[in-house]
Length: 455
Image (cartoon, rainbow, N blue to C red; front, top):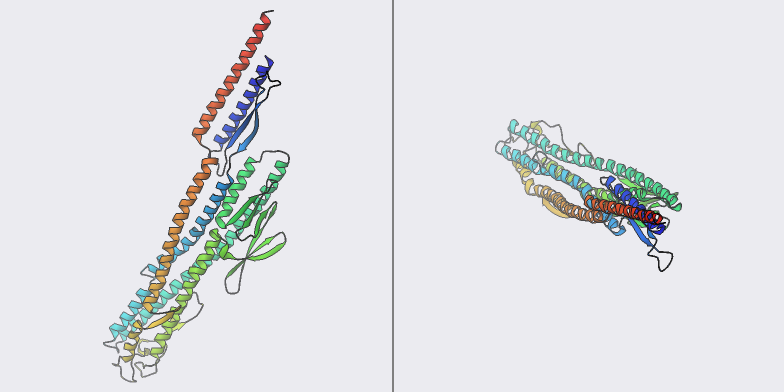
């Protein structure tokens, strides 16, 4: 009778552990990064071949986590945030450049329209004033767009610095978790919660950079960048440092175990790498092209005016002033009065419009933009088209990466996430097993009482 009771007691104990495990899963259904637990049991042998067995034993409580699916999720997360960090800047730049209020193409049209209107009566002070006004408006469009790009570059630099701090915090915490897991597993302790925290932090780290993750036999993990530089090894954490050069660019270095070495940002991946991509593939090239346009426009107009004479018979003076590298005054209009516009090809001929016509012809002349010769309007259209194309392609890539991340998350959750339906079934199963084993004990006790009563 005692053997029956021992078997039943082992069943009750297994059912209790199963109920406790199920309760833990249900309690953490809304805990981010939680991996559900599952009891693993095995049958106990009897003391002889004529014995049915020794009951059941819970050998372990298994944490359901699939390393391959985690790696897939981390890679997909890296890809998604790479495109996401670029898209915010591309969208802002495209919206600004395509708006009527900031369009340089519209400003050029209005400037040449003012020149055309004055061609019939080049001596009109009012029409000359209109030319100066439209020149100022055009310069403001250049300056506004240039200033906006500078503002985006400044925001990007601040974001890069903030991301480096986030990465440093994550690597520090991951190293601490490694240390705790090693210590806890060395005394056969429960590390399920610590491992959940570590996976959650690793997923956060994958948002900022492409990482390689490998588990060490002692329970710790090593994390390195895609190009091999170490971020976390055991209880040691690497730290990023962002420094600014004299040219306003940012350099990134990694300090690990007392050694510091520079990092290439173009292979960083993740949100950190996305910032580098949009800075050097879009924002800085756009700023450079804008400066080329402003400089060549200024030279074309000023060189044409230098061939003419103003209403007072004086030689022509420059209308525009170009300042390379300026954030607010890339292109400005000199302080000329309407009478000082040199629109005549001969001194004293106020009705002469030959220089004015030469200015009008500048609309069809070409400038050099990169390796191409294009008109001013076409140059701006090309720049806008490049930004729009880059934005659309990046958005398409972002949509694809987001979908892949969603699929990877679903695959991970299919194994690791808590399902209430499944846990309810488990709860009923363990409860029934508990009650059945209690019935076995009750039956054994009844048989024992009956046996005693027979004597």
